[in-house]
Image (cartoon, rainbow, N blue to C red):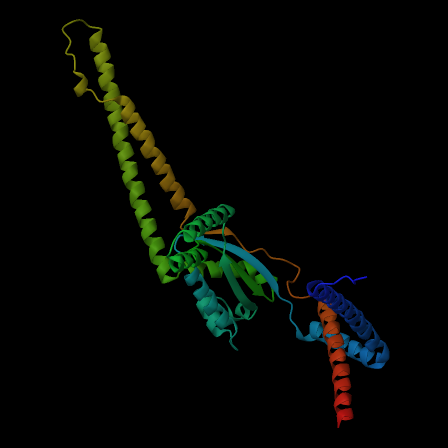
Length: 338
């Protein structure tokens, strides 16, 4: 009786699956062994771990209580038609450099504040404040560009456009200040707003915009006065024509071309009045530079709490203890080799 012949491919495939199974088995066993080792090390080195944990707790408590200063954060949304990311980032970088100096004279001078107030400032941060509608429009535009990219040879150009969209000029920015004393927040907001507003680039544009709005308001006011006078004349004219039409056939009848359409005059008057109201609103609200939402004084610090610092110290201490044990074992291994 002939024996069945087994193909080489079937034998190789079976061996491969067997090896994969052995690999996973050894890997699982290795993980379990590693976990057991991690658990066993502190038990065998109780004194070392307890000592390091206690020392870590003392260091963490001392650092949080005596060395680390509590600081407070507050955020303001500042909007201006003349803001752009580079301008704001450059300004914030300068303020942070001054805040990091050993003396507070430079920061106090540039913000026009007292030295004591400047000494309470830790630093500043700024990021574009993007409305939800802008985010949706941006994502739609990016998807459209990606679709174009799929059918275009100018991939590099489109990639540059996508990157450019990410740093597109934004007119509203979220400015964060960190300070040691929350009581100075309100005074600091006034100083910071004045500092941005007195920037030569922004200041000139605010002044010319205000001048243009004032001149436009004056012109609209005079035009409205003239239209009011014209409305009275037209009204009197129609009134006179109506009176003449009741007197008889000896009246002088004006042709249609000589009579102005009163509805058009009243519509134009309403249009100019709406423009006048819009200009008044722009002058009062100062939309080209405004504080959308100011700083808020918080009583709770933003810095890490003592509990958090102590927990971090303990974790660092445990890590150091494991490293000490590992180094000791490695040193023992090297000694046995020699």
